[in-house]
Length: 173
Image 1 (cartoon, one colour):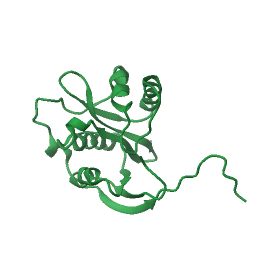
Image 2 (cartoon, helix red, strand yellow):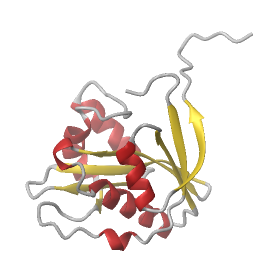
Image 3 (cartoon, helix red, strand yellow):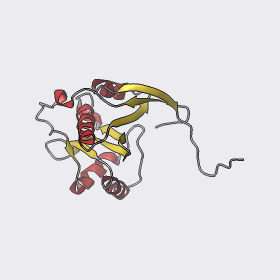
């Protein structure tokens, strides 16, 4: 999990056409935008928790969070042939011509197959089609697979941040 003092890389907009990463593997379908009917499978996908992603206590908590987010954010997913979500990426914030990505994850058994690249690429293409002019993201500095995904898509380093927990009950003054 993310801890105080972890360094993260901040990346700026991609420049590589995503179509060059199109999947030719019949084990899964192409990335598609999530709809309300996907809340159950998405909840099952996110419930176990992923490195640096929020951990919510129940399937219902994930369903509620994702349903709320889909009303003002964009989420792409890839399913296997049984309809299980195996990879996903979402915008964690959109507005003012910019978007921030988050919630990028792939199930363990499907890692290394380029699915995150496909999801993030499809998400970025959709955001640009909606008029977003820049897309940003951050990931933990030691997350080498994430670095490869974003480099493949043409994201460029913009800066480096240090995560510092603020906690509740802090008194300033």
